[in-house]
Structures are given as C-alpha cells and as structure tokens.
Length: 165
Image (cartoon, rainbow, N blue to C red; front, side):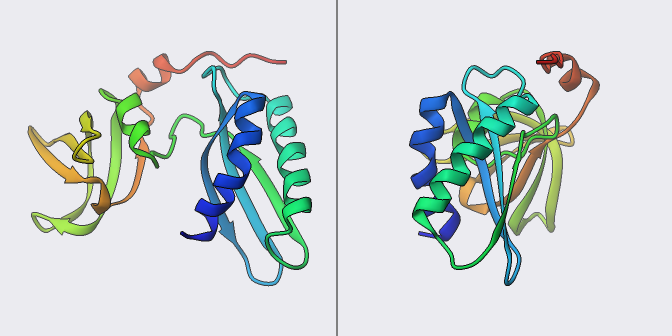
C-alpha cells in the first residue's frame, strides 16, 4: 500500500464524520513535504473557504498526532473544481455522461490520450466504456494513468452555482 493510500485510510473516517470526502492526496517535495489534499462535501454542495479551513484544521491535528514523516510539512487543501480529477471507480460511475480527458498507461490503437464521453463503468469488471471519435472503446481501470472531467459549456451549467458563506 502506498503512502497516500495509507494516509487517506487514516484521515477519511474523521473527515467523513465532518461531512467531507477525500478526492485525492498527493505528496510532493524533498526535505519539506507538501501534502496536497483535494476534498469535497458529501452533500455535493460547493466547497467554501470555510469548508477548506475546517478540513485543514482537522487534517493538521491528525497529522500532528500521527506524525507520518519527520520534520516540517506544508498542507494544502483544495476542492476538485470544474475540471475535477477522476480517481476512483465511483467517480466514473457518478460522472457517467460527462466529457472527460483520459491518459492510459499503455497504448490503445497507438494512442495514450483520449477525449470523449463516459458512457458507463462496470464495477464488477472494473472497465470503463468511453465514447471517442464516433466509436466506443473499453478501457480497463488498471490502464488509466490520469483522468479528469473536461470543462464544457454543458459541464459548467451542471455545476452548482458558487455561493458565498
């Protein structure tokens, strides 16, 4: 199990209890580590600055107790935004019908980068059906290196309006 997955398992119960879900954790840096945590509200309302502050305070306290790496670290909390990364199988299920950009680990028909529409995700076989240039293709979840939603006029309209807290 990699460090970020282990860290997510440690942080998720506390954040879930507060009404948040971890989208992705990225660890960067050398001597001073940067822990980037992307989170969203479980009720799917917009993340506000207050939400990010609440997540930051909770994660900071948990990291201080767990002390997962020696020395100083920087903590960055953000929301997924309109061009949200698709990381977990549930993300592909949730965003069926949406446009996405996908990069694969190994080539499919001589390519690794695709733009198209998420048709379906089969959780039992962990495979994505993806509409790409007038055809459909099947991509194994294990072959997806990166994926994110594409910001489109339709996608913007589907996003909840930004509300100030």
